Length: 299
Image 1 (cartoon, helix red, strand yellow):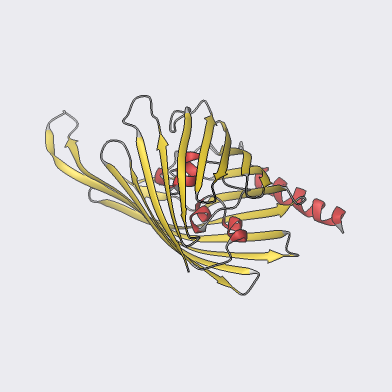
Image 2 (cartoon, one colour):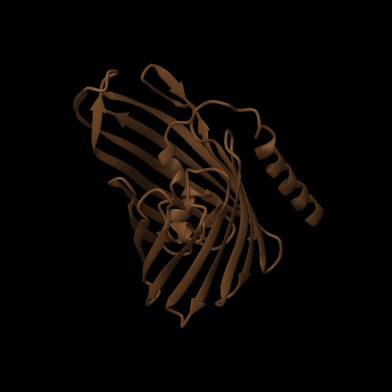
């Protein structure tokens, strides 16, 4: 039985990775790369294979494995260059083995300076990106979970706009009481067409290995591979203190410039196992530092 499970696990991972180096289109909807969760951000983007909340559906829908109560979640990101990102989600366990989730993510940019081909000022314009997601997670044998996201993605820049449907797939598997393996593929689907040119979505594959020390700490090391980018190694740890406070640290190791490659950190506050507040700080070399906040209600 165990050999069959390991074979299934291997084949699932292999099917995700067979075409990692066969894609060369320019991406659209880059806001999908930005994690809304301060918890994930403060751990360097780790969060595939350690307990999370409804916001982890952005990273891997099978991570809803650990949800055992209904959740309402809201986060806000103050990004650089006056970019604001908001995220709202609802998670609903259905029985003991299934979770249904709904979420919406919006990125807005105001007062972008427009100029023509000669550099003459033509006025200010705005941009808006949106993603609305339906998530479903199903447990198997109480040690394995499969998750799926169906996403409606919309992008608008000035008077140009387009939308698309995409989906994510994820697997989570308990190797034993302490080690968890997880993998996911994100943003399968058609790209967006803007300025009469078609751009692909940021198709990304992830692998994660988590080590869980109950009530003490969780640690994860993971690998991301976006089709037309270098491999990213993400490591993160969260340490639980006094039953109400969580300290988080992370690191991103990559040659790419779209994200910080410094250490990241953040805090979490647990109020009576009902209200949860999270904060993340992300340093950037050439831009202002980024701050992310979230509030979650379990009911």
